[in-house]
Image (tube, rainbow, N blue to C red):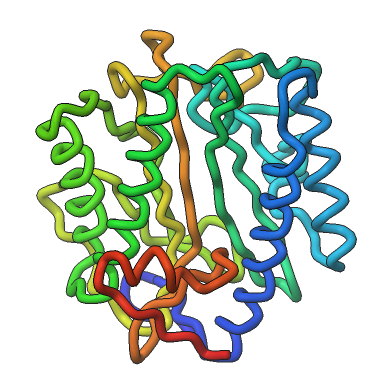
Length: 277
């Protein structure tokens, strides 16, 4: 089950169970996306996600994890990740990142989206769009990658290309990276969202990873608030977070938390998915 570097390698049947967890996460995020609007509290969104996960017979990955008190993370504006749902009322123009995880029969799925509320600053719309495109580029890189470092190369390429084409200069958060996932929510290996000298472990069938770039409109440095969870940008700049769980299979890749397995977005990048179902 484990290869070198203690990376958990899944069997096809285990990947199929992870797919079930991934679809629960996709449905929960779709429910939250459909509900989110100005005037709701971040706790209201947590209630929507909790109902979606439990009605599917699954268990939230986040609730109780290292004493985390909620079902999802809701990070608003300068909050990068791990925002705790509570009494904060969403306002027009807020940029809201929603991170969700679920467990089915002991196997995890993990995904995140960003929603920009009406009356949005076009710069926030661009931030979310570039972050999402960078995530898909990182996922696509896995299809032909020899080493996991190709993900960070692809993410950074998108950010640099957007800036070179006249778009905003964005920071890539380096304090928080993607990760292995499977029988636990966080497993080796780390998956950086930026270029590194280390090329990372070899990409092998059976690996499952969460790819999750976090981009900001300013400096990439972050700090953690007094609640010991919420991560914010040091300079107050706004942030976006997108994430999918991806399986590497013998014949290619499969995005476990995308309803279509990632087929539509990856086709735009010249990659065909390789589902097991």
